[in-house]
Length: 163
Image (spheres, rainbow, N blue to C red):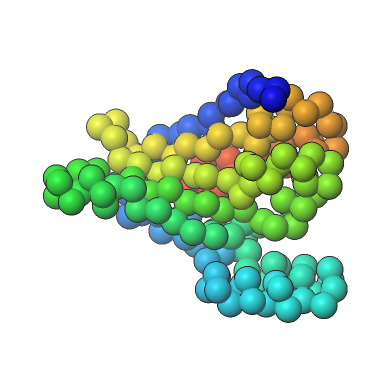
C-alpha cells in the first residue's frame, strides 16, 4: 500500500481582540444553518439547481457555512475552570467541495475544512491548513485553482475576524 506524504501549509493570524469578539465576527460572516434541516433539504433536492438553492440559502456572506463545532477548550475547563477558549469549526461550501472532488476524489478527505480559534498568551490565534497544500501533490491544475480560491475565502474570513 503506497503512502503519500503531504506537506501542509498553515495560515495563522493573531488578534488582540477578545475571543468573544473574534467569534462574533466569524459568526456574522459564516452561515450557521440548522444542519439537520440542511441535510434533509439537500437530500430532497431533485436537481443540482435545487441543491444550489439549498446551499446558497445556508452559506453566509463569506461563501461558507458551519457544519459543526467542537468546543475543545471545554474539555480542558473541566479540569481547570480558567483554561483558555479553544474552538474547532468544520466549515466549507458543498458546491466548492464538489468542484474539487470532480478532479481529485481524495479532496473529500480534507473538505470541509477545519478552522481553529484559540486563546493563547499573545492573543487569539485563528489557524487554517490550506486546502491547496493538501491537493498540491495530486498535480491537478483545476482542482488546485478551486482549492486556492477556497483558501482565499477562509483566509479573508480569518483576517477580517482578527482585526
